[in-house]
Amino acid sequence: MSDAELTRRFFLGGAAWAAGCAVTARAADPVPPELAPAIEQLEPYFTPPVDFRDVSRGKPVPHSLPDEKKRAVGLTRETWQLEVISDPENKTTLGRQFTKNDGTALDFPGLLKLGEKHAVRFAKVMTCLNIGCPLGMGVWEGVPLREVLWLTRPKENLRRVFYHGYHNDDPNQLFRSSLSVGRVLEDPDDLPPVILCYKLNGRWLDPERGGPVRVVVPEAYGFKSVKWLTHVVLSNLAHANDTYANGNNDIDSPLKTFADVLSVPGTPKAGRPIPVTGYAQVGVSGLSKVQVWVHPAAKKWPDDDPYFTTAPWADAHILPPPKSWGGAFPEERLPKDVLGFDPATGQPAAWPMKLAKVHWAALLPGLPAGEYTLRSRTIDAKGHAQPMPRPFRKSGRSDIESLKLTVTA
Image (cartoon, rainbow, N blue to C red; front, side, top):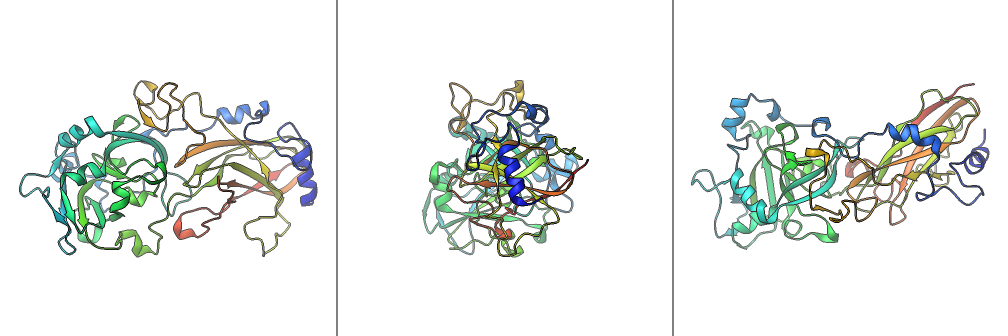
């Protein structure tokens, strides 16, 4: 079957697609009832903490340590302490430092005391830079890092904030990230603040998720959100020296927008509509559309169009906020005062939310028996089609997924 014939089927072949060669189904169009069973099987919007994927570092992984060892090294809420110091090699002038040796390190009750006045909560998808799917979607709660920074009374020569977590007292296992001090002190483009996080989905952060305290950087990939936090180092160094930089990664790349398929029938029958569902990660550039395209597997696509820009893409339905958020929140309710949510209605102020995920669905019209390739992509709020504007792998995954689709007679 030719692409022209497939395109005709997309636009004329069923209730999911609007009639006419220049109009496709839009996110606001009614979702075809044939999609209801597939939509009902979608994953929860928020991920229960126990269901987050784990990519923790360490030998042994710190969250696997025996309870007695966790208490001894400060990986419990009762024994956690945070040192906040000047970089000894690139000194920042501070009015005070917080160290274990002089008994001034910040402890967990002290952090919660700051939280009584300054705590924030925001929704964020946690994604690894080099893994092809999110690790989980949650509501993260904590104290803005800047509130702790200001306690040191910085005076001059402060350009970068380094931080690392517990690493089995082995220098070779140290995992460090950093941010410009400007990002810590100010939140550009209405971003949430960088936080010292102690709760996920309204529950204490458990060791597997980086507890008792971790950093969470809203717009960044997971390597910036260091787990098992123990040290914040204020530095006059003008550049980053993150651990991840040594792996040829773009350490300043924020979250990208991209789409993936979650479900498609294993062996759809010829001539019958095919329900497809998926998710989109909504990066810093937002999201305007999710699109799908079915292509005969045997037909080679031109080499000079690696991103399929001339393919006959068709719009999928971006699903609205769910009736039930999931996430295993206490009392099955979202916490109060989540940034980006209307306090009166409990609903998002804008949809889709940036730095989060959204579900989508499409009803493909019936196809003749044969082998096909199914692809999905996003169009961000600035009009860039995935994988643009940042197609490079080391700045985060955004390649267009390809799935085999076998239609049987």
